[in-house]
Image 1 (spheres, rainbow, N blue to C red):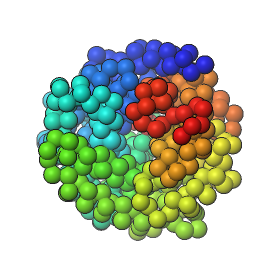
Image 2 (image 1 turned 120 degrees about the horizontal axis):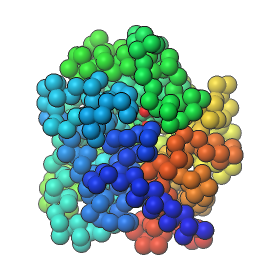
Image 3 (image 1 turned 30 degrees about the vertical axis):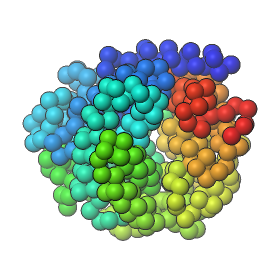
Image 4 (image 1 turned 135 degrees about the vertical axis):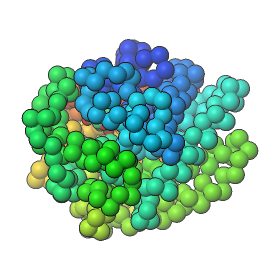
Length: 437
Ligand code: 2M8
């Protein structure tokens, strides 16, 4: 069974490969996306260390002078394939832009974690070709940007657009996005709807505000501290990935003879500050609306992802919430993106209920970190099974496993492959179908 899924996953990654990087999905997402590439590299490391390295190095080659890694690197000047495209961002006109056309926003920082996992898959080859020496300065500059430009209130990374969270239309962003003036609906182009059902994508109303907000950020020259930006949130999953990547940076630094201590100190600070996002009565972490100073009180999968951190004080509470009726660990298909008991949960709509494979993979690591090996094994098994059964769907119904969004989605294939191969090679304790770990 898993041999068939494995070869189908490899086929998806082959078809989506564009020579130096992988598109998330043909049609719907025709460029390189930042956090997708990091997840994809984690799968590619089992096929070819060089290809996994290239995947990461091509996103790093689009780094801005201030250190930011862009949400999207546009593969061509073809403006019609995806909106907003290179003509919207006009990145070359902005100060400090790279030579490649990119978006100005960012995405969650999972890159240093991916770089470490790519290295660990084949340390000899990685040392021989100098991978860590090459990527460390860019990754350190990325984290410097995050610390100096995006952590201004000291409670976590501040994100200025729902796209930056990677969980675009999460119910958490409904209230803060209300403040954003939208562009007129008739100006909106939706090439995405040529490739996905209307009912499975954000609405035109959402897009009106997404575009209005992106234009405001572009027009202030990507000034992260500009007081006129109407959307500013701190998000638990992004904060957890930042901490985990800072840990990885410390390990990378030590491996190449650099000072790991600043990364370890920074990680500790991030984890301490994460506590500002804990909401006791929800039993999970929740985003903060920086402009009101208040927690955004929804139970979403983002608030559970900090489980991947070994030293948080609330791991037992998170496990309880995961196992409870809202997320039904072991009973639902993987883990839903939103509380199944919420009045407005939608089992087919993107980040408002369906189960996603990247969050399942992160939670699987979290379960192992906290010793819940049987549940981690069961989640790993579900991840592989539903990836195959859904033809590597972008996301699935959390009760039935029915496929939604695009098919042949790269991070679904990559992470399923990672789970299968990690067991074979023993490089991480990620998957054991026989439940030995
Ligand atoms: C989705 O987001 C893009 C915008 O970045 C979109 O909807 O057009 C999200 O699921 C995001 O997390 C992901 O990185 C991207 C590409 O897979 O698609």
